[in-house]
Length: 282
Image (cartoon, rainbow, N blue to C red):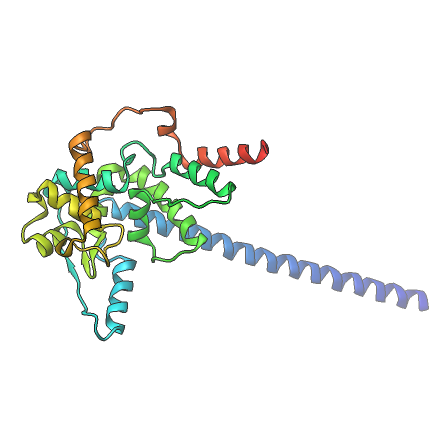
């Protein structure tokens, strides 16, 4: 009798343990399913964003909302929103050329990332130094259109993800078109058409070389630099950009230039492999 009771107790324990393990497996399975569905949904949403951006100009960007909120909170700061969307054909080629030479000289060559600059930054970092690393126009477009402006590694990672996608789907011409229609040229002034009208009183299509260079020089710090109040530094930088425009000629978004070297064809993945090799060789 005692043996039978002991067997029943042991059997009940095993049954309860089995049920507990089954419940645990069931719970983990549900969690995994939720995670998987969430990942797929987020991925699908980002793909949809990029596909829509291929033929629809984003009506608002996170920066525009962020900037409006900042303006509304500050009493002495006017709330301004100036923006007129135009096709790339209605933007002066001079401005395209000026922006490339001022912001991203390898724009027509790279796949979204200036790998040469990234390698140089990595080497300087290893030596304990820091250099100023500028984002490419493709990266800036991804950041301006899809993401809030913040300085976090997560934001940089997501920016890289969007950069790869817009390079693959949009191409250089569309990236430049979206960039010039979304980038900030002043407090509450977005896009080159609004900037041209605000600072020079005419359309972006009729910008002179000097005006185009001025707008390009504004971009790194649009809240501090103003073509209407040009400082000596601003004037010097404008002259530098004009000099590059005269020396290197016009940028043609329709024609992909020949690679100048093997490095011009490197991608983000090539950079990652290069970093791994550097660590391995140490």
